Each structure stands twice: as structure tokens, then as C-alpha cells.
Picture 1: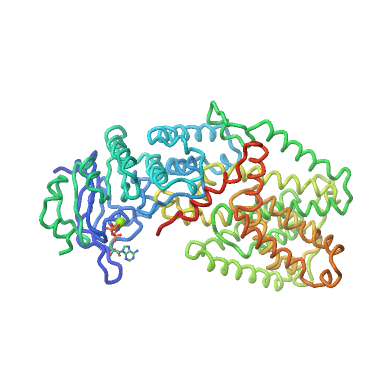
Picture 2 (picture 1 turned 90 degrees about the vertical axis):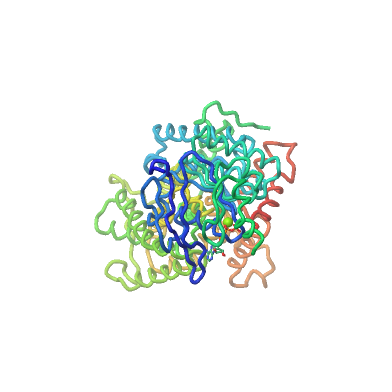
Amino acid sequence: MTARDTLLELDQVALHFGGLAAISDLSMTVHPGEVLAVIGPNGAGKTSMLNLVTRVFDATRGRILFKGQDIAALPRARIAHLGIARTFQNIELFDAASVLDNLLLGRHRFGAGAWWQQVLRTSALTRAEEAHREKVEEIIEFLELSAWRNARVAGLPYGVRKIVELGRALCSEPDVLFLDEPASGLNPEETRDLAFWIDDIRSDLGITVVMIEHDMALVGAVADRVICMAQGRVLAQGTAAQVQAHPDVIAAYLGT
Amino acid sequence: MRYDYHTRYRHGFALLRHRSDWIAYGLLALVLLAIPLFASTYLVGELGYVLILCVASMGLMVLTGFTGQVSLGHASFVAIGAYAHAWLMAQGVPFALSMPLAGLIAAAAGLVVGIPAIRVSGLYLAMVTLAFAIVVEQIIGMWRGVTGGFMGMLVETPRLMGYSLGAPRVFYYVCLFVAALVLLALANLMRSGIGRAFTGVRDSEAAAFSLGIEVNRVKIYAFGLSAGITGLAGALMAHHIGYLTPDAFTLLLSLDLVLMVVIGGIGSLRGAILGAVLISLLPNAVSALKALLPESVARQSGLEIFVAGLVLALFVLFEPTGLNGRWLKLRLLVETFPLYRRDTFRRQKAYMKSERNR
Ligand SMILES: Nc1ncnc2c1ncn2[C@@H]1O[C@H](COP(=O)(O)OP(=O)(O)OP(=O)(O)O)[C@@H](O)[C@H]1O
Ligand SMILES: [Mg+2]
């Protein structure tokens, strides 16, 4: 495999919380253009892996390479500017703001004009805001959020909030999108929509997707490749069927 | 009923979107401009003071309402603005230059206070800002060469191109001008990228980081901006008081500002103004009320503070969105009459209560 086939690489990464090793000696690669699913029992370290990539936590050891650049020591706010977007397991939206403002915040990395332009609301700034708005409207249309455009996030049903969070991540036009349990709390119909969207995100928008997910039906439907984690390391990887049939994986889920 | 039909995005951006908005705000502007022509000098002076508090309240709203950082020490920025302005004018700096400079000096102090906000929040931040205010009060008392210490310092009459702006009727217009300017600048800022970044930091730091917002820098900037605007209010306040002493800028003023922001409605400039109007008129209302009360009650000391506390408690209990929330409901009632349903806002509340399951 050549370097060009690797978008993101974790190289012998470890993360310790005091004495507890949430991640130990984890190595994995993300290839451009794929939908990669990460599965594993509770506490396997899936969210911790994502938090390492997005610099919420400092890795105790190891390298994290994005497009060949080591990002393991970058400031946390730089990550989005590289083209890495994410959602959160427990939904982190801007609750008091409207759906529109949440999505516009997704555009933050593309800039919003100098401060004095914002104070004076110059015509150049209005044009820039219109351009952001246009992109946001594309995402609203894509995710069928138009009914909620001006609603305050705090008043929205759970399923809609999850989609708004996905939309906000898409508004930042990332190269790779991490989804932390996108289907948890969704009803079967919403989950089916999600499967189509993830497929479109990869095929139409050209965004690589890494999805942490427990719902094996969804994983089987959309993932090109599956990695199973347990106790902070990779247990098995391959197609959904291969991983599910792997004896170590079965053992990990049965808790033996 | 009224629906928003926008054929271009920029129509949706406008501050005043409907003809009724233009009429309402136009009338308000006319009334504000005309007040000195018929009101008594005392009333004009008091209203000028209300406008000054509106500016200070908007300053704190930027920090607490939009960025979610508490401050129990904002009176110190009022004081810094007031003393800086009075001192600069005493050195011969012209009024029109001294005002913005005083704002900048207060902003610089705000940036310094903002640095601990990176590490602490909530109650701890409240304590840090409170401590800062106490230190500032002490410094003002000690630094006799500049501030006149506890003896105080006289503020020179404001002049613009040779004309005196000192008379209450004229100074009222100065206050109105500054308040309108600050309102417009902040309204523009808060609906643009910087305002969105502020609310982002307030509502979820984790998400703000993940979108590339420099959370720490935003907090410091918010402190600087907030302190700068509050300092501007302080510069105006210097002229309103005429003679500066440290006891004009105590914890009570800081608490009043917090009351304005909370009662007005967190996260709204309209709320900041409504809150400032209510809180600054409260003492007058209480003294008017005293005449009606039985003498044994009216003679109790601390009646003003009691009423202020009562109003705050009632708002927190029954109208957490503040005066601004009440205003929005009233407006919807008028617009949709007779279709308004009492529960229009209730569903949202129910969701908010169950929102987080972690
Ligand atoms: N901030 C933290 N401080 C201390 N320990 C932590 C922290 N975050 C995670 N852990 C621990 O690290 C381990 C891995 O947690 P992680 O959240 O990554 O699991 P997960 O695979 O995402 O599980 P789930 O499927 O439940 O979301 C757990 O034992 C957890 O208790
Ligand atoms: Mg997790």
C-alpha cells in the first residue's frame, strides 16, 4: 500500500488516564474515499480514539498522521482547518441558537470577514455571508432540514438534532468526517435515511467517513471496511461479515 | 398572521425586516430625540443616566449573555473608563478623542482579566472578577496623583469644537448618540461571524473547538470588547456624576448590571436595554410606591434592595427568558391575534427540560 492510499494513520498510539489505559498500542489507517466503521463493546476506546484525532486528549504515545503531517501536537482548534469534522456521542449543539446559526457556525473555518467589516456590515461582508448561506442551504436541502431552518435547537426532537449536528459537520466541507454513534436514538425510519445520506456523503460529496456504530445492520449496509476494537486496541478488521465471524470479536462481545 | 418571504438571502439578514418594524423603531427614535424639548431638566438628566446604563448593560451582555462568562466585577470597568476619561481630559486631551481612548484603556484591562477565564468558569470566574473589582477600587483609593484618592476628582465639562456639552439637555444627546452607536455596532457584530463564535463558545466549548473556533482567544476578546463598551459607559458616567470618588463604583453597581442582563434576557441586546430601563427606574418606582404604603413598611431601610431581589426572583421563577422573552410573546400575540395559542412556547420548554441525558 502506498502513502497516497492513506488519508489518516494512527501509529502505535496510546492514551492513559492515570493508571487506566483507554487506548494501548492502537494502529489503524483510513483510506481516502471509504466508509470505515469502528465497532466494539462499551469502553473499548472508540470515542477515545476519535478524541485523540480531534486533539481533545493528548496522546500518551504514538503518532497521528493526517495527509502525512503529524497532528498529535497541534492545537485543538487547528484540526477543523485541516479538514477533519466530527459529531459527538452525546450531541453537542449550540442549543440556544437556531438551526441556521448552528450550520453557519460550521462554516467558521472559511472565515467571516474582518472585525471592522462585521461592525460596519459592509457590502463585501453581506456578499460573503450570502455565499456561506448558500452552502448552508445546500446542506439543508440535502438533509431535508428546511422545516426546521429557523427553529431553536433546544426545542427540536432528538432525531432532528442528530441530523442538525451531522449537517453542521458537513457545512465545514471536511475531507474526513467522524460520526460517533450516529444512529443511536434514531428510529428505524431515520436510521434508513441516515444510511442513504452516509452513502451520498461518500459518493456525491466525496467525503471519507469514519463511523463509530453499534447498529450492525447499518454497518453492514454502508461500511466498506470494519474495524473492531476492544480494550484499546484493534481486534480484527475486514468486511462486516469477516469481522462479525472473527472468533476474537465474538469472544469480546460475549465478555470472555 | 405574518410570514417571512425572502426572495434573496440578504432580505433575511436585515435588522428591520418589516415595515411595522421600521415604523415602530422610527417612532421610538423620534420620541427619544424629542424628549429634551418638553421634559423637565431633572427627567432629562435621569433619562440620560438610563441611556448610560443601557450602554454598560449591553457591555456586560456581550460577555455574560452572548459568551456565557460571568462577571461580578463590571463596575471596575465603569470606574476605569470614568477615571481614564477624566484624567485624559484633565491632561488636555479633547473630549471626542478621550472618550474612545477611555474605552480602549478599559478594553485593555478587560483583556487582562480575560486571561484567567481560560482556566476557570462559573463560580470561580465570578470570584476572580469580584477580586479584580476590589483591587481596582483599592488602587483608585491609593493612587492619589491620578485619581485624587478618596478625596475624589473633578470632571471637566465636555466640549466639542468649542461648544459646551455639559448642560443636561445637550449631554442627553451625547448619551443617546453613544448608546445608538454601540447598539448598532453590537447588533451588526452579533449577527456576524464574531457573534456566532461567541454564542458557540457559550453553548458548547467542545463543539466550538471541533469547528475550529479558538475558544480561549474568543473568551479573551469577549472580555476585552465587553470591558471596552462598559468603559465607554464609564466615561459618560463621569460627566453625569461630575465628581468621581471610588464609592461610586462599588459591588452594588456590578450587581445591578448583572440584574439588568439576567432580567432583560440572556443573549439579547433588546434584553440588555429593557433590563437597564427597568432596573434604573426601579428606585424611582419604589419611592413613588412608598407614598402608598403604610408608614411602618415605607420607613424600612433597604426597601429598594428588597424589591430588586423580589423582581429578580420572580423573573427567574416565572420568566427565565427575561423581559425579552416576555416581549417576544407579546409581539406574537399581537401578530397572530386571535390565533395565538398559549402553548406556543411551552413545547420548547418541555424539550429543554429533558434535553440532556448524560
Ligand atoms: N475523560 C476520561 N477520563 C477518564 N477515563 C476516561 C475518560 N474518557 C474515557 N475514559 C475511559 O476510557 C475507556 C474508553 O472509553 P471510550 O469512551 O473511548 O469507550 P467507547 O468505546 O466509546 O464506549 P461506548 O461504546 O460506551 O461509547 C473507558 O474505560 C472510559 O471509562
Ligand atoms: Mg463512545
